[in-house]
Image (cartoon, rainbow, N blue to C red; front, top):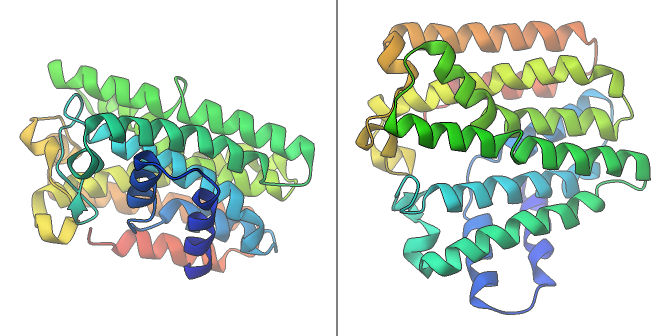
Length: 279
């Protein structure tokens, strides 16, 4: 991943010097699990392709993800002060600069998307998917529903699932969708969408479990969901049932990946890593 981290840094090097650029660097290069790029790289390897072919597409997703975290942490939303073990962007740079840094990462993501392939048809589909999965049909819709749920918490598992299929699931589906688009295997899209949704829900349920069981030091972030009394999978199901649901979702994903009959070992190994994560 060191090469990809270097690539991420170069994506911003061409930008003019400004406090906004500094804030973009601060948040984009703050580390993190890089689950989304890894999903894309493993998806490419499943098709026998070099992960480096996915660097631009992966950078686009990470920029979208990072912008969403910057805005999610703002006082008007979750009002978090800690992210990846560091002060959140608005704490470090002020609210106005943080908002602009998020805006800039969002738009820069589409620059990277245009660099994702020499195949103009593939680029068209990638840009369209990036807009759809991150915008008002995707992640932003999930965030909006999450904010609505602060005033009126979700009253059922299905309502909660509907929030997180968009807020978390869309950006964890996108890397797998990008992999099949870059490989020219559009016929596999529906299978990857279901796999990505399962991984996204499992990831969110894990986060809900960690909010209860892990320390702030281990998580590297503050637990605003508990502070805001949000509905969570743990509140509905209890920890044990939530853990069982994570296992079920990831096992279903493994089965579906194997059914595609690809070079699936790296991706299955990544699923195992997700299953065992502790923060």
